[in-house]
View 1 (cartoon, rainbow, N blue to C red):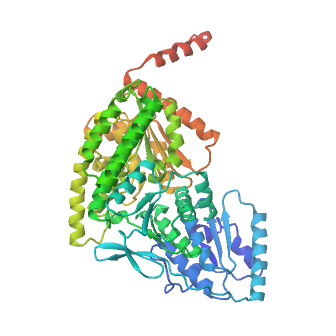
View 2: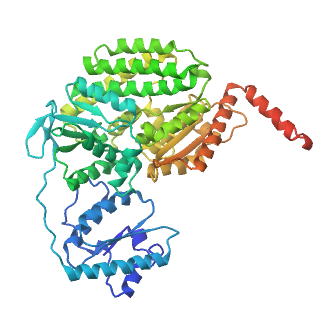
Amino acid sequence: MLFGRAYNAFADEANMGIPAKLASRGKLIIPWDMLPFEQEPCDPYMCWAHGQNLLRAAHFAARHPGLFGIYITNFSCGPDSFLLGYFRDIMGTKPSLTLELDSHTADAGVNTRIDAFCDLVNKYLRVKREIKIHETFRPATIETEGNRKVFVSSDGTSHSFFDPRVHVVLPSMGRLSSESLAAVLEGSGIRTSAVPVYDTETLKIGRANSSCKECLPLQLVTGALLRHLEERKDDNELCAYFMPTCGGNCRFTQYSVFLRGLVEKKQLRNVALLSLTNEDGYAGMPVSAALGALKAFMIADVMTDIRNALIVLAKDRKHAESVFEKGWEEIMSCFRQRAGRGIYGVLKKVAANLASVPRRMELDQAKVVALLGEIFVRRDNFSSGELVERLARHDIIVRQAHVFEWLNYCDYNVKTGVYEPLFTFRGRAEFAIRRHLQRYYERRIKGILAQSGLFRFEPISIEEIMEYGLHFFHPRFTGEAVLAAGGFFKEIMHTIHGAVSIGPFGCMPTRVTEAVMSVESTLSTKEKLDKSKNGYHKQCQGITALPFLTIEQDGNRWPRLVEAKLEAFALQVERLHDRLQGGDNNERQNAVVYQTVRRDQTMERK
């Protein structure tokens, strides 16, 4: 059976003659879409229609004694990075062959692998060994009873989330965001902890338990779960691993599916996934915890920006970081011990202490770059921390796109009908109330922390971001691409002097963003969009291209090419900053050096 996508597996121009190679060896080969697979089972969480049909056909082939699957895929195909693992799991001990093709694939290597596969199939048919069926394993689950969620353990008993045995474990998605959410749930009476910031060891564990073709965040959250289970001291805990999901084209939809399969494959008792979805605004948390989480995410977003500003602006970085950490611990203590009561008073105290830190310059004078792109990588300290530090060496402040911006975007899609949640009357009322409260919280929290002088208060206007972004993407092409384009053109030359779009290696939304923005990130596009929105635009003489850089992260050290791109990007940012500031001594010194070097050619620099 030939598995794969029709445009490469079935096309003579793309499949390197693999069907003909098999036919020449006396093997009958037919495409998977000829099978009667309509009644086969399919995982309800498989979001891709093509994937659903392909896996149904795989179930049919796995049961049939005379059918053996060959899966043709292409290098860096995003959906196939997950589908291949599911395909192999369905086949079990039955031989199957995966052929990954690209423009460099050699014909001799394909022939060798086909011959080896045919030999393996012949031996399998001769042996016809029966496979022992292991005892049925029952994974733990998270169920909804009435209006509350309960933990159903592997022995079938239900436990409230307030049961001290139930332990909610949060993957790290930025140290401050994870710690703040953990503190909120702790304050609500739910035993919760956030895993430490990822490191190389966590990545190794994740890679050892995946195909390594999945994106970097999947490897990190997988490694974090398995490392927690290995190092935990309480073997009787009921582990609820928080792994939200989403609608749209991103592979993130399959993280919870992959992890459920991993739990069953490794037969991890009393480990369940707590999954909320953006298609209903992440509904499902207790109301008090949901409101506390909103405050916590906003505070974490702003405090992350403040820390990034401090490491550039402070005269004594070590002293500034100690002041920051002391203030952060006071905020966390308020959430853990007092369930967030009195948080605004704590924020005022923290803002005053931060404002007293001696600075080399003020925020308005500094160079600022927005960090956009895939939400996990741009917030995760392990994935993006090196970028923040490298740009800080050039006196560039990195402003990471807020988690709250993503929550606003999810609400926008619900409101405009892009997502179609199955709201009850109560759910719809809670959604409306939450939207009203989160606007109030945003004004209050950001207004207080802006008094530190390290954060510029400007409410997130998702409607305005989308107005810019929809010039490049259809609203149903959901994900970070429209936010990256819209956020860049809304803020460039206004509050930022450039932007970096970062994402996992092989991430489709990141590459779509790069394809569009590498052409459109120009001053002329900015002027055209501003005129259509406001009727005016900001002039900037001598600038044609606007600083926009795309980086893919795979967990390894960046190659020299990426480092060179970062250096060039930093120079572009500095140039735009100086132009907007009206020029400075550095610009004039560069002109003098240029004239000295080229004096023999009698050129003048204007």
